[in-house]
Each structure stands twice: as C-alpha cells, then as structure tokens.
Image 1 (cartoon, helix red, strand yellow):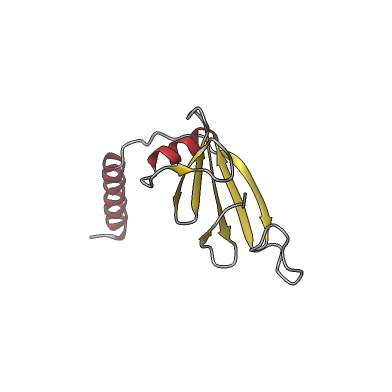
Image 2 (cartoon, rainbow, N blue to C red):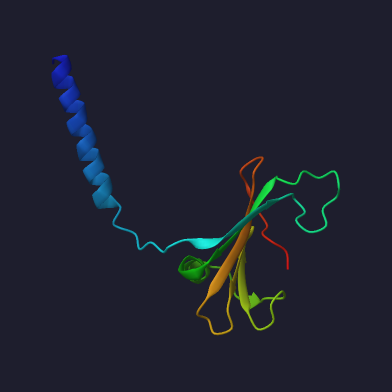
Length: 124
C-alpha cells in the first residue's frame, strides 16, 4: 500500500471510530454551571500564620447544576447543621445542600491545588 493509501486508510478508520463513539455516547442533558470560587489555604478561616494562603480552590456550585448533582447523589439526606431547615447529602469531600422548598441547591468542595485531589469545601 502506498503512503497516500495508508494515510487515507487511517483517516477512514479514525472517522469510523469517531462515528462509533458518537453513536455510543448519546447527547447528555447539560446544565449551565454557576457558582463561586475563592483561593485560600488548607484552613480558610483563621489560618495559622505559617500556612500557605493559596493551596486550595474552594468551589460553590449553584443553580440547575447543583440541583441535578443533589438529586443524583446516592447518599441519604440528613439535616443541614449549618443552615436550619435545609437538608444535605455528603459523598466524600462533596457536600450539597437543598433549600427548604426543595427547588434550589448548592454544592461545596475544594480542590487541593498542590496535588489535584478533592477536599472539603467551605466551613459553616
């Protein structure tokens, strides 16, 4: 096979693979992402003076994305001890809180910017 023939063969194979991927991965229902982020140290409130002040990105997801995350979490609901009347679910470092009327939610977590791991979000 010529070099040009090999190139076309590889392109055709890649295109077939792309089509198979598109068919195997139907379109996802995507929610817009809203929220807030702030950068701080491991201890965001009253940190020790020698602690780095930029080791974590504290994220809060809100809006439709947070409500979808809350509803998708398999964890059991429990009272939110930080906000009276609200419910919450926890999974590892992720904590999502549902409003009293059940129509809005927020989700909190942080990303350790040193090693890329998820960590607990903002404190009460």
